[in-house]
Image (tube, rainbow over all chains, first blue to last red; front, top):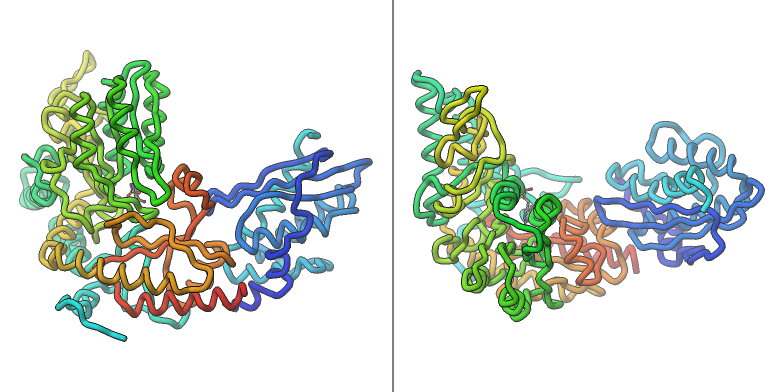
Length: 141
Length: 412
Ligand SMILES: Cc1ncc(COP(=O)(O)O)c(C=O)c1O
């Protein structure tokens, strides 16, 4: 287990200064991610128009990994189609749980794959992603 | 600077705990998670193994020699627990899976039989979910209500509030943990029992964290019910007990049915056995219960008072050492608190702290400690908790502080 893989500079940076950490009054979709093990809670909101994610944001607090992952998620899916975001979810999820080598380019998200070595931290990295999928599946807000 | 403050033989105590001899991530294990569960001494492991390997038979059922040995060991264990908490009679001890099941027994048996719509159960706002959720279930079923006893920032309980509320009437039960698993607060259960009784209420004490660290005398405390888990006091998991005052237990209906708890069964109806059988249906966890008694015997032989003094000395040192760590704030500063050191770090979330400590071989608990209402009240979503036991030492604290300094560097 290597701590430097887990806490890469980019993760610490997103953890310290999460991007898109704000309320979104005109959100069309939203869901809450809750990890009962540690009490971390993240609310993810999206504004979707014509099948495209125009804006993504989150609120809530948690560990560096869950905050960084949520922050990077909002950057990664902004501007993507709903289909692309769902595809990114499944590729990210498979990679982070160590099921597959990353398929295609995960971009900055690859920095989060350090959690593979820390099985009890995988949930931190996937919290916001599950919330996004739920938000996209749920009824329009 | 090292100073020997007592003659406590830490090395000898540690040598009795096989699990402590191992390495984790290439470091010596610094086990500081005893409030979640303690490690077990050889005496307990041997007692459980003997029960399984030699005296194994069902209890209260056979005439053969092994069944008699198993039954004797089981009954003997009840006496040991009764003596440890100074119960007036052995039948006041009912074996259960643990503290959670003991609370459920009181809530579902006593609560359903005695709570009426509009009546109140007062629970301290620092209760463990184990002493909240069963009462909520029973309140739902009976129309009674559950009300929190407010806590201060330290946290300590607001006894003035309690007295005023009791005086208003309608309170049937007060529930409180003896020692707080999240902050180490030792609650004044004796005084609370006196107040409750003055106003016609009973008191249930959650003793999960107290048994290993505080002298427990249920009669002196005035506890009507006292819940225990073996695994928090050097015994096995899945075993524990409820102490209940004899007249109360006698009047309570069984809450689970089965074999061993009946006098007669027919399809027209069944009659129930006496105490404690009425509350122990089915084949019990005999090895667990025997291990529980072995753990209490071990603690008495090691010296409860000596262990307490050792933990208290270490708690003072550890508090000073932790307070010197940059950005660290201790959560739980009640006077006379037990050896539980909960803290938050400005720079880092407890979950990140826990991961880095693990790589230093340090085992701590991170999270809400099953006390979500308390965490909300204290305004912290989670803490990191280091908790002490008979085998904890300065080297564990050194390793903890070294790990925390590493956290401070990573999250500078
Ligand atoms: C104060 C307190 N009450 C109750 C419990 C529950 O004990 P068990 O899980 O052994 O039933 C615990 C253990 O976490 C505790 O610390």
